[in-house]
Image 1 (cartoon, rainbow, N blue to C red):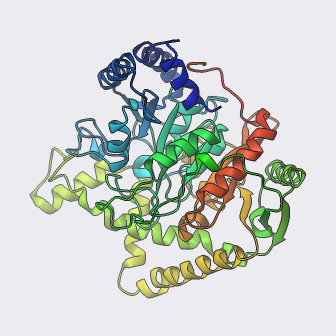
Image 2: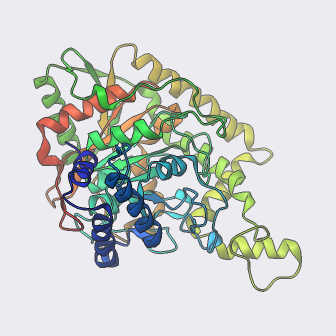
Image 3: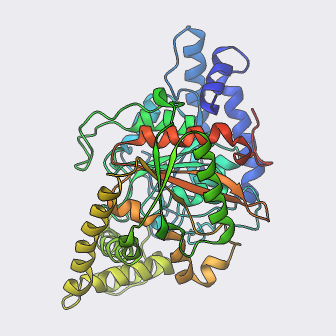
Amino acid sequence: MGYIKKIQNMLTGGEITCVEFTKKYLEAIKTDNKELNAYVTVTEEEALATAQKVDEKIARGEELLPLEGVPMTLKDNISTKGIETTCCSKILSGYKPIYNATVWDILKNQNAVLLGKTNMDEFAMGSSCETSCFGGAMNPHNTCYVSGGSSGGVASAVAGDIAVFGLGSDTGGSIRQPASFCGIVGLKPTYGAVSRYGLVAYASSLDQIGPITKTVEDTAIVFDNISVYDKKDSTSCNKNISPTVDTLNKDIKGKKIGIAREYLDGVRDDVKESILAAAEKYKELGAEIVYFDLPALKFALPVYYILACAEASSNLGRYDGIRYGYKTEHYEGTHDMICRTRSEGFGDEVKRRILLGTYVLSAGYYDAYYKKAQNLRGTIIKAFEDAFENVDVILAPTVPMTAFEKGKATSDPVETYLTDICTVPINIAGLPSVSIPCGFNSNGMPIGMQIIGKKFDEATILNVAYKYEQVCPENFKDTKWGVKL
């Protein structure tokens, strides 16, 4: 049983009240967040008010909704009405949205208990959480290492047991990479399966909201509840998405699990060994392992950075110091004010990506870079479609290495772009992928693998992940932090 169902059984069975349970998490945040730095805003009043509603509902004998009474968190780029939403950037300091993101409306209407907003790389641009203006979130397995990015705060909070689950966003691996680094479960859903309304945009054709949890069952429960059609999001899918919780633990005998040889190129030996060991476990469960070539993967990283930065340069043009957020104190005229506000308000990594994106969209370079990248995106999409004619899912490393020590990403930011090499193809193709832990390195840091599926086939990848979780529970290890059930 996952944590969510266990908590609800505790609440409805009278073992503990929701208010008491919420206070345990709030106390743990006060103690542990000093080192983990997972939270940037704690919403104590909101949490306790919601918990009180849940206790009143239980007292009336009413049945709880699937996520009711469960302490959770949101990445700080998901809009929360009246609660500061900064994207961990100086330029949005003090900004309180006047509306909720659709995913938060769904959770709020279920009386999920919001503990606070969590740390992230500034505007979701980074692979370590260290580009945050609040400083990076640390890895609960060893605080000398980063939690990953950009949803590092959510992963740190969940792995550190100061939240039961959280919602992050994944543009090029920002849910799966920190989940891998922190030894937990992270789902990047199919593009369009979960509404992006109220998500502060980085790259709109790549961004996707998804859950980060400690178990596959919890991921399935959260996904089933947030994957609804939303007319406020023009990219939201209006087809019925199959529930995933009810399909967990199905037999995978005869399933074809593909491993693209290119996914293992340049991957560190300990990571590769863990992936191949996981493949052997699947063979023992009756699955067939199919090795194949996917040469289009070599285009993925340059295509991603061209498209993502181009879209970022457009999306971040709205931050001018006029309407909301940070505004420079000293300026001469409107042009100077906008220039100074952006120079002072944005961090180095964000400025780097805006400049790159503006460059590839400029006259004389559009055809050479942006147009070519869009064409190659089509090639990558077609390559995955062809692969799925022969396999049911694809097994791959989530990241080519384990978590790196704090400070490494900021001292060599270009080198850390390579950590996205396994994750970005999925965003380019709009496919679903779930990262689950599959081992540990010699320093005790988690290793993650991802299971990639066809569009809107989250049920299959979560079931394949669940079967592995059941036979290898030792890879889903607790840390010393937070609240223990």
